[in-house]
Length: 209
Image 1 (cartoon, rainbow, N blue to C red):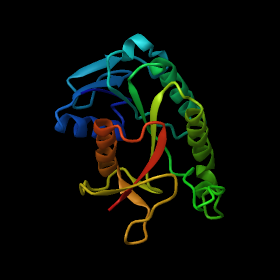
Image 2 (cartoon, one colour):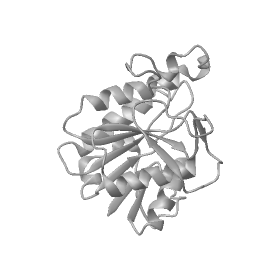
Image 3 (cartoon, rainbow, N blue to C red):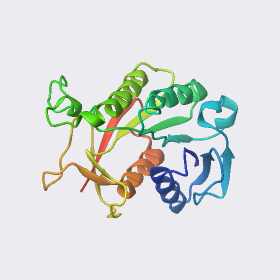
Image 4 (tube, helix red, strand yellow):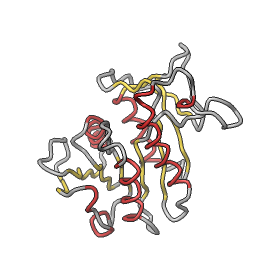
């Protein structure tokens, strides 16, 4: 299986690359500069300059793009649009490292995590950007996308336990009543989905076991 990981130098990207390599996948890092991931192969190109030709032949493309500052948050949905354009009407699947703010907290799917009174104002623009990306994906019937929301507490330095719970559109808690997952365990879930392709044109979510 041929997998391209966009922004492979980032914290999530590097762990996804490592996990995929450990499964024997043929992994290419897509980076703007020096490849600092474990992948032996790389495409050195800005995400926003990627074309259909660049991504042709990959079974799966993983969008691990992240943005945190007010100046760059708007690039989250822009990245999704760019990649959709590059893989549209092909068999290449697009996996998106998403956000948790858009997870629903009721069965009617009328309220989200970000709507809650305790959701920090500082994170609302980020949640809105991820939500915009997801809403855009829902309208793309010509792309084999999967949007993967992490738990509310997404721990960059958390341990790799090897266990996770796969959820859907609603916020899922583990047996301890927590919504938490490490980047390492999230990477396992991403690679599991890359291998299985069971949730095309769906949003799934991941929480620690």
